[in-house]
Length: 185
Image (cartoon, rainbow, N blue to C red; front, top):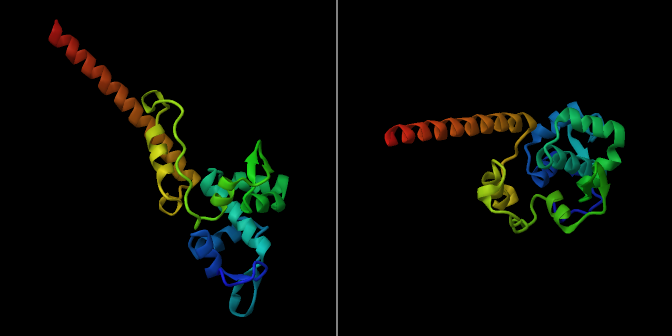
């Protein structure tokens, strides 16, 4: 894909490889986001314009990187328009729901093939950090290509599971405290 002009049309396989997602996901997104309109030629072959690719990169970033739901992203496209999401796909930062000028970190995020940034160092010790801090730190230290793509449904399930595990930990600590108090008395 690097040998093509930036203004050249891309096939679905080129776009899928560039975004590091399966082709069927691109076809699915076409059914959920009416703003995705690739040119279709004989035999149903899809050709994506540069603006289409930027829109898809923005959709990918908002869904997978920022944790938006499909419904939430549809609302953004309706209220702020596809240009806003295209700007995000081109590396624009999301500031208060609006897009700002791209930063180097955002530009790296827009290109999943880019070298990963070194992980940010935590500003407080992990021992007093919020639940899940260690897992988040571990995931952020992985190269972008190795990070799992988690959808909103998966995220909700993982949050519920984490809550259950925290409650189990609380119950175990209580049981251990009771057992230790029984041995002392």
